[in-house]
Length: 428
Image (tube, rainbow, N blue to C red; front, side, top):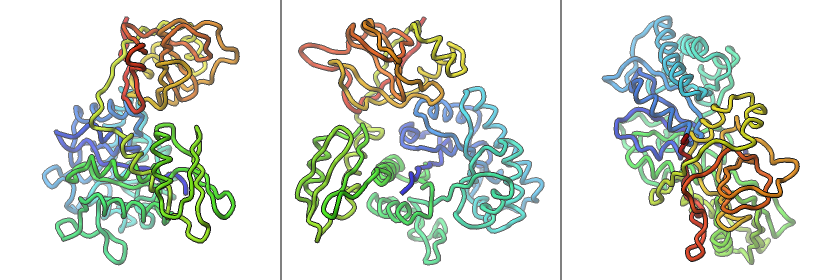
């Protein structure tokens, strides 16, 4: 299956948990209609930049009292202007933060009303295009007036399903306030996610940020989607090969796969897991067996954020900037804006591979490695960044120097461990 993304409605509550931005791949940011103001939008955009989360404008009926969940009698022209104004407000703040708005999704009652009315659908899509242009992707139901209006306007369309909402026999959502409308049990949300993702009828699955237990539900959905996105290929009748993500602990993955009914053995390498089984009794979806392990690597609540102070003075900083078409200051800002996770530890004792870099500053390794990289040099290569713990040869692009940091202790080993969260603080 192609990758199915998790989108979360955010920027709506004053006590919103920041971990939701690490879990979301798309953040639907309330832009003033039903909730949100400049302060909440700035915070949301900063968290999107930190976690590499894609930004989605989330306009609605202008109905803060009803949280945008009441259908209002608004003329198409007025509605177009309201949607354009809300999207433009978020776009202006996003430009200040240098974060692009790449999606748009209607909120609440407007989402449903516009999808059943070609006139309203055309009005809201015109408002979106007026504020954001035609380069955004509209998140909307798989079928209906919004899909048609997006196509007519030249917008890409992402088909959406809801992980934390119950459905009627015809596939429509159970109205809020009725039994079964909102799902809060992890098992039911997981089942809903598997059904939506494996049918191939959606491109993105939504969790609402105001659903009780939203963080744990979002973690469940993200882990399930990540597991189902793993590439799998058959190796004859009694074996298959899975491509493993860097964040997955290999020994635990082997144990989980070996424990599946019908599995004879599982062999895990750096990049893959080969699962051998009785051809007469193949295991159920083995990727879902890895979802539990993936759930532990996404926005784990128990791990603290480690901040490393960096002076951006590396010899390759200017070349990276030139290649990216940015200023040196912009490269440093983008590097320090992200929150990274330790994907693996290797090469040198204490050398942590941190990802993911902002795509705008991704560069390949140097064609000829240096014979000597100084200790605590900060480098980037591909989608990774890291700090050299000792002086050594190395082929990464050097953009800075870490200050007051010891990467490896002889008695305690590597300071940065798999799954740790890391930020760089710019100094000097």
